[in-house]
Image (tube, rainbow over all chains, first blue to last red; front, side):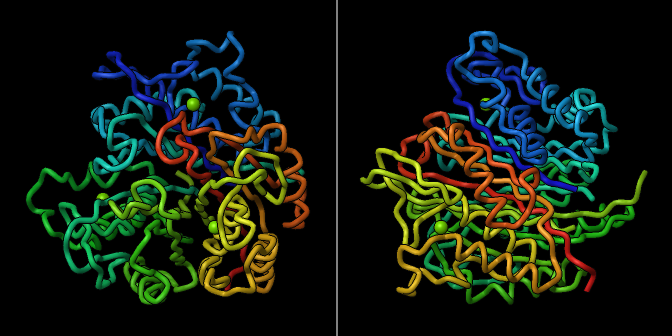
Length: 159
Length: 159
Length: 159
Ligand SMILES: [Mg+2]
Ligand SMILES: [Mg+2]
Ligand SMILES: [Mg+2]
């Protein structure tokens, strides 16, 4: 078993929805970024790449390349999962923590878990989505952005 | 093995003690929150829930409910541990990191580990408590709050 | 398997290079700290100590002691690895995430991984180095400091 951790942040700017764990949520702001700015999927992608020791999301999908503009972040996650599968690996567990003052994540948690399980091709019980505010402190607390931490438990065969 | 991560923050407000890992420490401020605001226990509770894929502390213990007011956070941890036990799970390891400019954690580390081991019902060597400052940077550095990160290694039987 | 997490921050001050994962990188600032201020090695050291439940880097190497002044942080990592080896442990995986607006980590990733694998005495595929910016938000975004998160997957024999 190898465990990887991913961390990501995107800024909130004027807009009317955010995409988190592949689920669109109406909001009084949107996440800024080259792709769809899904911090949760970005963090999970990096967590898997971290468990594999295979670069990071910025290396495989450079923000400088126009073709990732507005891209569905599921593409990035699928790439990390394909790298894992190519090594004979299996995603034993994915745990995503969203750090945001708003929107409320609870009402969307099960939709997010279902979407993540689908994207990862694992049973629902292998996927966790949690959320917390930053108690109005720091950049998250000032609603300047949303952060995400993800932890991936990956089983890899011996080399 | 499934690994979950928890993150929590509470604001520091005028007061004279904080409760961290269930240990009361004299301080020149207190942690604000609905319960006893023990960031360390909250992060560990969420780490275990993350490993289980079973909601988060805010879902099981909504701050909106008056009955959790001033509550000992050991109650939240016990609930997560009971959910784990109901699934046949075992807490292989709990690692808590406190991020705080003050108070000093070192003198209280062993009391905290002992308390956590007791609360979790595991041997002392399965519990870690670490601390670091934020080098005077950000909201932690300005002593506006204390943050905690916890990692739970959970053994679950196959479904 | 036991998983530990480490977190560290150091402030950026006027200077002309930083040391990250033991690799010197030219930069328009330097990291401030008692030792060489290698946040990545500090976070990884703490992650291993967290998996062992054996104190933290500040406990074993107090900043108050003059002898660690300007010290190569490889010394701290070697100490944590020795503690692990004394317990019969094995480092199954090390995942380091750097959170910095600059310098760019990508061009140095493989040098960092090679150095970490060497320091840890493990195969290159057991070491990951990832990086992300904080999207100009918070103290990292203002280039006031660099943060690092590390996750160590440690195999320990049963006691
Ligand atoms: Mg991103
Ligand atoms: Mg809390
Ligand atoms: Mg340090």
